[in-house]
Length: 311
Ligand code: PSU
Ligand code: MN
Image (cartoon, rainbow, N blue to C red; front, side):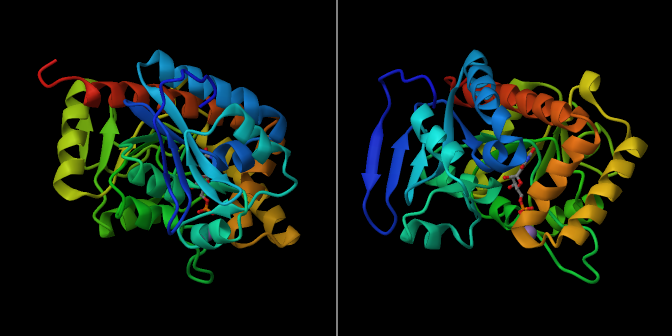
């Protein structure tokens, strides 16, 4: 993304959606929603650079994905990222509104769902993020389920994440993944991590302790099913937050979101933003630490999947 090696491959498809691919294998997809809406704007560029370096030092090439003036761009340049960061309002694109935003020649930040979709089109098999979207709390009265879940059942990409975001109903999200038949594998964990916390009482389908063995499984499983996989990587122990303290901040942030009238796609950015403020930066530091750790594992995974057989 940010460093230009001059070796990249460009492919432009004019119809039905303009598509620009600059990616070198082994590639790791990175999303723009996390950078544009998930962290305060003044931290976005620094995080982008850190993720870029982390993926490279693990032996792979980062490919930042987003919509630039309607062009689905896989492997954004630093200038293109700056365009998004300078724009007054950048819509979040999920699988439902990506096509319409492209049609209108809009910029857009891609969520997990559309980053998977575009990575899949570009032949990228590994993607690193923080936490996937899922089933929101309170679905008895108000149903809100992220398009990320159905994307996992649809696009052949392994998503490395620390479970789903803790502001969601984690148990319902885990159950929905099961219903959709998405394999959830734990990297060095027996339980489904809860974003800022390493453990839960929820299961994973299989545990892998060795990255090379996990890479062999992921390659075979993607080829076998043509669908996605969730690689659950717990937050590093040193950066973990305490569950009860977190629950207090989360309740408060949700109360404020309700009062402010945040709904639909605005809920996640609002609540994450308030959590960062209420915790005086603790959730932001934890969020950055877990994304970085996921980028490292994704880089290792992509490199191992790309290595010649038997090595
Ligand atoms: N992980 C983070 N921060 C984020 C997100 C993920 O650490 O901001 C983003 C991802 O782009 C994910 C989106 O797809 O939040 C989910 O949004 P929604 O709940 O509206 O589907
Ligand atoms: Mn939603």
